Length: 540
Ligand SMILES: *[C@@H]1O[C@H](CO)[C@@H](O)[C@H](O)[C@H]1NC(C)=O
Ligand SMILES: *[C@@H]1O[C@H](CO)[C@@H](O)[C@H](O)[C@H]1NC(C)=O
Ligand SMILES: *[C@@H]1O[C@H](CO)[C@@H](O)[C@H](O)[C@H]1NC(C)=O
Ligand SMILES: *[C@@H]1O[C@H](CO)[C@@H](O)[C@H](O)[C@H]1NC(C)=O
Ligand SMILES: *[C@@H]1O[C@H](CO)[C@@H](O)[C@H](O)[C@H]1NC(C)=O
Image 1 (tube, helix red, strand yellow):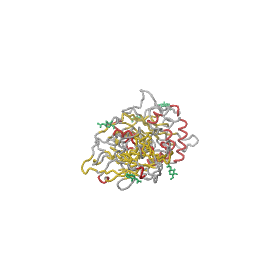
Image 2 (spheres, rainbow, N blue to C red):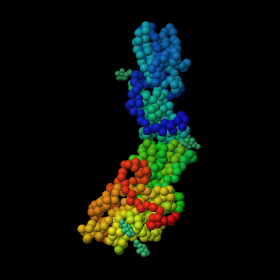
Image 3 (cartoon, rainbow, N blue to C red):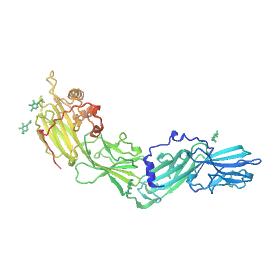
Image 4 (tube, rainbow, N blue to C red):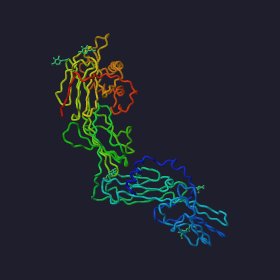
C-alpha cells in the first residue's frame, strides 16, 4: 500500500468503527471466508445426499450493490457461466452431481470480495440456499524489513468489505495488543522508535461480523529490525518561532504542532543562556502510551495539556505553571511517520515581589529570557506621579514605596513588560489605605497578581478594592504593621488569592479570541506617549 495513502487514513484515525457504521449492512450470510489477494479459497457448499436431477447456481453480489449476478450454473447435463463469472472461478469437484460437493474454488482478485450465494434447486424448486461472505484481508508493513532502528513501524490491516469487521487486533511478538487507529475497513498499529528487541512475528487477528464457522482468522507478518542502520529524519518542517510571555505561576500552554503526530519530544534551554544547548525534558509516545520525563528541581514542571489538545489522538501541547526561571527556549518536535515538525517557543516570565525594608516597601519586578524583551516599566495608577526606580541587575527592576502609604502613594502599581513582537503583559500590586475608623492599622497590601496586555482586564476599580481587604483579612499576614512581611508570606497569600485572580488574568492568546462583549473591563492603564515613567531595560 502506498505510504501517502496511509497518511491520509491516519489523518482521520480518530474514527472508530461503531455500530452505526456497519449496521446498514445485514449480516445475511451464514459463513465468512477470509483470504488475501491471490490465495486460493474454497467457498463451501455441500449437500449430501441428493436425489434426482439438481441444478446449482452460484451468484455473487458486490458490496453496495442490490442485484445478484450469476457466476455459474451447473447441472449434470450442462454448465454455463454468467456475467459475474471469472475464468478462474471453478467448481471444486467436477463430480459434484455425484458427491454433492458444490463448492466453488478460486484465487480471488481484490474486486472479488462480497457475498456469494450457492443455490441448489430441483425442477425449479429451491432446495437450499447458502450465502457466504468472501473477505479480502491485506496486511502490510512499512518500512519494509529489515526496518532501520528508530523508525516508525506501520502495521496495516485492510479489510474489504469493511462492514465484515467485528474486531481486528494487532499483537506484538510478545502477545501484547497494540494500540490501533481504525477507519472503516482499515486498522493501523504503529510502533515509533523501533528497536532491535521489537523484532519478531506480529499477528493480526480478524474477527468477522455475523455468522462464521471460523470465529477468528490470524494473519502474521515477520518484522526484522536492522542491526546497524538507524533512520535519519530528513523531512523536517520548522514552525515560525513563537515569542511569548507569562506571569509566574499562571498556567501557560506551549503548543507543539497544528497537525497530528505519533510522538513528541520536548527540549528546553534555560533562560538567558548564550549557548543553544538544550536538554530533552519530556517525551510521549501515544502508540505505546509511554511517557518519559527528565524533570528535576531545575527544569520546568510541565505536563501534556489534555484540555487544549488531545495527546492520545496525536495533538500535543504542554501545560506549564512557570516559575521565574522556567522561561527560556522550548523546542517541541512532533514525529509523524518519517516526518518531523519542529516548533520553537521563546518564553519570558514576569514576577513581582514585595519586601519591606526598614521604612519602605520594595516592589521588585523580575523577568527572564531578556533577549526578546523590549521594555519593562513600573507605573502607578496616578500617571502624574513619577516613580523612582533602580535596575541594578539585569532582569530586575525595583521601586520603593515609603511606609506607611499615603493617599498619594497607595493604589495600583503595575509592572508591564513588552516583548519585541509587541506582546504586553503586566503584573499588578495594590497598596490600600487603612480604613479610616481604625487608625491603628496603617494599611494593607494586596498580593501581586498578573494582568494582561494592552487592554486592561481589571473588573473594575471598586470591585478590586473591595476584594483586597477581604483577602488581607483572610491571609492575615499582609498587614503592613507586621514589618516582617516575608517573601514566603506573599507567596502563601498569592496562592490563596489565585482563585479570584484567575478570573482577572487571562492568557493573551485567549483574550484575543474572546469576544469583547463577553466581559466588562475597565482600562486603568495610563496612556499616552508623554508618559513620565519611562524605564527601559535594554540589557541583552
Ligand atoms: C446465524 O446463526 C444463528 C444461530 O446458529 C441462526 O439462527 C441464524 O439463522 C444464522 N443466520 C444466518 C443468516 O445463517
Ligand atoms: C469438496 O471438494 C473439494 C475439492 O475436491 C475439497 O477440497 C473439499 O474438501 C470438498 N468438500 C467436502 C465437504 O468434501
Ligand atoms: C515531507 O513531508 C511532507 C508531509 O508529509 C510531504 O508532503 C513532503 O512531500 C515530504 N518531502 C520530502 C522531500 O519527502
Ligand atoms: C497624582 O499625583 C500628582 C503628583 O504627585 C498629585 O498632584 C495629584 O493630586 C495626584 N492625583 C490623585 C488623583 O491622587
Ligand atoms: C527620587 O529620587 C530623587 C533623588 O534620590 C529624590 O530627590 C526624589 O525625592 C525622589 N522622588 C520620589 C518621588 O521619591
